[in-house]
Image (cartoon, rainbow, N blue to C red):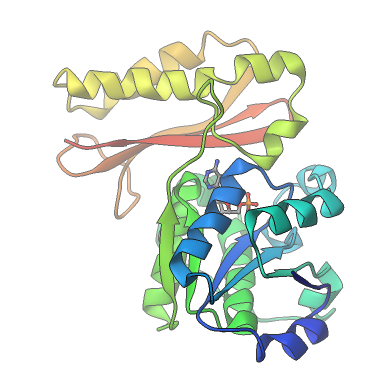
Length: 281
Ligand code: AMP
């Protein structure tokens, strides 16, 4: 496995690695969710292609200083996990490698980003689009894998690729969960034992609300109320947003007539977690 710690090292190697190349962008603190993306990348390129992983905690997508500072960075462990999962090339730049001190160009998406995490984390998605575009250009990847857990991110990356004619295929990968239903996340490590024990309420509330849909409910209000009712049982969790949105436009819907998403972002103290369920009418 090749490890490139800076852009010069990456550019020196990138012409020589076998194609096709599939890129898995991550911020590290790798868990089973990330590893299943790496394995999906291998499936995509076959035994003779290249599976590349980027590990970069991208400062410009963080809206809270504390979240950036406390983001876990277990690099040695991550490299071992990449090797074990079958990656061929890992890129581990630091921020000074990725952004010139006077960098002044960003990629922003201005429609899907107005909702959900984009509304509650100003500048987040332009930080994401900018770094992802840079990674696409550095690797000249034929394909890339993103988790559906971050479904708004996936929708925005798809939109960026469509609108800017980026020649890359995007593969969306199912969310990997802990046995108790909690979606795997690097931020789960920051939960106290008590918060971690409480956190499966996130998934349970969303599933309980989705169950109303299977009983025939089509109005957003009672579905949102059902999720809120469950979430409010937790004394530890604070809702950032709970929204029912159209699966394509991400705009709020009042009546479910097309595929929709019930999306939640919440805080356990300063740890912010997200999850969602799909609602198919
Ligand atoms: P992150 O390191 O959080 O930026 O995530 C890197 C990639 O892994 C993104 O495409 C995420 O959507 C994906 N990912 C994170 N958590 C999960 C999970 N539990 N299941 C599947 N994919 C995930």
